Length: 300
Image (cartoon, rainbow, N blue to C red):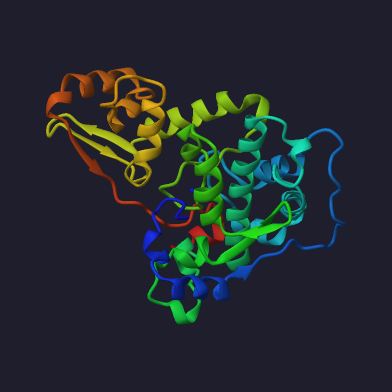
């Protein structure tokens, strides 16, 4: 949902490499036509254009019709102009509480991820967007998540930075991991609606339950007593454990404790019964594009 869904610490190990990162980044600026820039709403941040885009181009399983979106970018570009001009940092009057701020960053991450795919489409995976040619030895996903730069409230940065230095640093509730969509099949599904400040708790609970009760992400093999988990729970385990332990005297919380908060009752009962002998394994992550385009799928 970048380092979105994988750690890039290896990218930062020398000062020379940091210089190369700056030199190699590609900026993706808002398109100014055919519509003029969107002014700041007087009292709130408007998600109407994003809602229209999601309703028109996202299916009920979270697939995105990128081929049609490439040809019909109006709502996507309108919303991008809004987030490029306004953020909780540049216009705090539009985002007066933590829920409004988190909703903005989640929606902005998801929109710019989609826009990044559209800029390079047709592709079969975010891994198809290469890093700068001199940095060919870097992880394949770095080209998409690290080297593309989008604008948020007048500041250009990468999806990697947005996820790890803004969202993960500022917000303690790890349910955002079930809302951030990295345009890949193993990511949480992209909802057909924005995340709204006044409904954020309800929406995040829904997405957490959907993700954890989807066998593509969590499954239990009672025969081998093995709980298979999405790699998201491996990469970001510290986020889940820190939240579980916050403000509580009991410190021996593990990732299973978080899974059990949302796991459906029958499977949860089996996991609890076998907990003393439980094995944890992590499922391979499918970086194939979450593409619902008929012409793209017909090529497979």
